[in-house]
Length: 289
Image 1 (cartoon, one colour):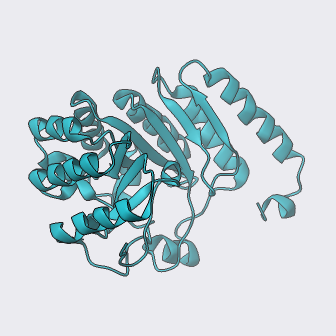
Image 2 (cartoon, helix red, strand yellow):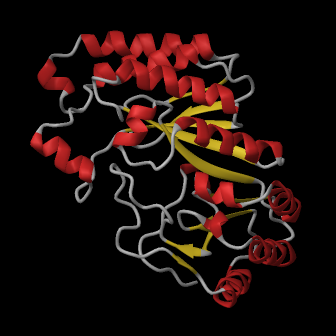
């Protein structure tokens, strides 16, 4: 198996076979993101991709999940993706799930017929970053699209039978946009009604514009208490029946999981307990969280 640069995958793909079908991210200008900065976006030669899958078949007796890396595999030509998916199906008949990251732009360039064909060929789910439903946050963080466009791309994926996992980031609007970020992000999730909703907590990475903004004081991070408040505002506004809500990333202050809308009250109660526990700490104690 051959890999170029750092390889990233969602937490749920920890046990998946990971093969790069593209290198890097096709957008790669988000102000908060440090991923893929060491490599230029490139579509990997198809013969190399297929060779890696054949090598994996020789190495691993059983492969049940496959993740197509890097940051935007869906941008490949649909015919080439179908060839990759067909190869996976032929080499790994035991495989039950093939997934990849997808950007709003790569979803835009795929016709609905192409997306349905990819689903028929074995692409079961895509991961898409919403980051925020608030246009002011998206503009500041250089996401490249407004919330309405991202929501429509998510709905397009779902119309074509491909499962959708969408992530957003608490704290991305700072204290000034805390309430708008929470409310608008909840509205965007509810409009998409994805199979999975994932919440990350903002982490500041060196080498990003956000890092510079934090250092020069033009962007202030949320305190843990503010972050919990924002999360609660978001969860109480979610109306996305059947969506699995996950807040289980290493960045999160609190692990939270449930099925919407069924478990919303239980998750709110858990958030309230966490906030009450946090209020018992002195500021110098929670600053280290």
